Image 1 (cartoon, one colour):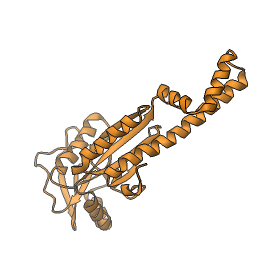
Image 2 (cartoon, one colour; image 1 turned 90 degrees about the vertical axis):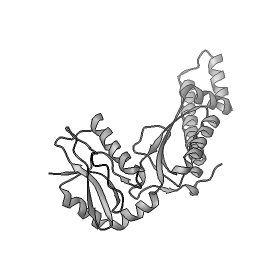
Image 3 (spheres, helix red, strand yellow; image 1 turned 120 degrees about the vertical axis):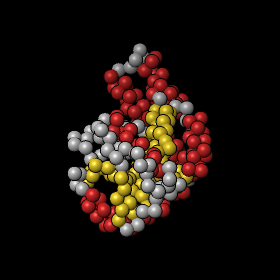
Length: 251
């Protein structure tokens, strides 16, 4: 039978509760596989696994329960290996990487931040700050709406100004939040917003990070800011675009 993998821990990590169950219907019992200094939290993988609410919650619950005793490298929902031997082979093969990540992520959680424009508010801001757009809009108004070329020109200017504002806003928000984080990385998926970023935050610095979020909201009333967390540090298990947060300076 194939093996479903929830996360990776140190071999010395306390075992999960004996009655802990995971994905599947009925839920499969959770067990631990070991190789060298590492361990994997697994269960038997059910046939036809789909990202249904029941199984998504089961996956999260296993990580939460296991994480209460120490650092766990969380894997995203749906990681299935051919069998137990394939799992222990990967633990052996990538031992140095996983041990380094366990050390780097110990005591840290992830906050995922998405930002977007409030359309009316950002248009008002763009109009207020751009004299050319204001003048052209006023000329069109006096001309009863202006001709096609005038409206096209105004639309192009507004679109360009909003895009430029989005670039500035994304940089400013990230710069305000980064000093309270240990690292910054790409979020789980793109939402089409102006900012979709994950922050690695020490548990004991979470209050400072959330205070920085509130400060960013207050300074950018034309934005929506959505924060999800604390989460297991999904975005920081593998190497990638994550970078030390100290590389970003607050304006």
